[in-house]
Length: 161
Image (tube, rainbow, N blue to C red; front, side, top):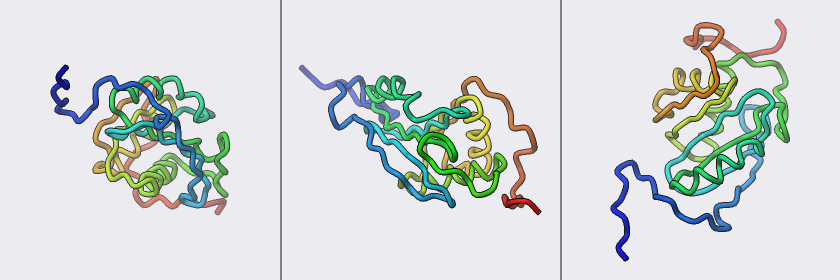
């Protein structure tokens, strides 16, 4: 039986899940918070930015399916959610997007596809605006637009003034 011809996008068609496809959970110190992260599968990286209060486990059924298509899924508990620590001071959307960009640096990815769900979609849009070379494709689900102009480059996220 011959191997299927390679997909021009680099995806590996429908391989069977193996124990190596189980999530690798790590805690990474990023931007002043300790984030619980998950990496599963091999192939083109897809960063999932979940909605408000969503823990890593919520996306697990989706991850198990998508990795069979040659996708590596990167997920994380947002600051203050699940097992990730909270920011010392509240952040606005540009500050959260900066944390996500620093997370990409910490996991060693220069460029990823991004799936943003609900509030995660707002953060994903901001990430794509602030760091366009890091976002190859942007998929938005059940989301809206950022509540303020997204070109807030000079904003300093800090505590009470």
